[in-house]
Amino acid sequence: MRACVLRKCVTPSGSQAHCTACHETFTAVSHFDAHRVGPVDRRSCIVSIGSRMVIPPATPDGSEYSLWFEDGLWSTDEGHSDRRAASARMAAARAAKGAK
Ligand SMILES: [Zn+2]
Ligand SMILES: [Zn+2]
Image 1 (cartoon, rainbow, N blue to C red):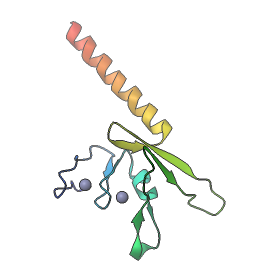
Image 2 (image 1 turned 120 degrees about the vertical axis):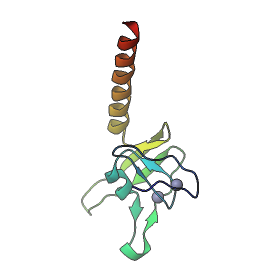
Image 3 (image 1 turned 180 degrees about the horizontal axis):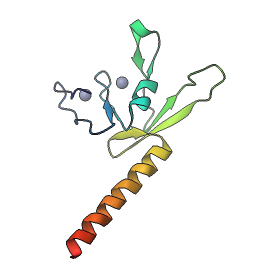
Image 4 (image 1 turned 90 degrees about the horizontal axis):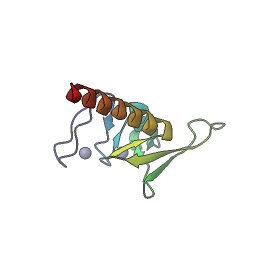
C-alpha cells in the first residue's frame, strides 16, 4: 500500500491500509475494502459518523457492522482489542527487557 505524500498521512504499517481518497487508515485491507462502496467505476468511501463507520451488508442477507476509530485507525471492536492486547504484550516485553 502506497504512502500518501500529498496529505502527509501516516504510512500504514504491516497489514494496515490507507485510503488515498478519504485519507483514513484501516487495520486490515478487508476493512479498507469494506468502506469502498458503489459500482466499480464510481467507488466512493463510506463517510464516518463521529468515531463510527457503518459498513453495509456485503450480501443481501448479510448484516451491517461498525468500524470504530481509535489511535488513528479504523477497525472492528475485535480488531481494536487484538491491537490493544498486542501493544500491551509489546509494552510488557519492553518493560521486562528494561528491568534486566
Ligand atoms: Zn476511503
Ligand atoms: Zn492520505
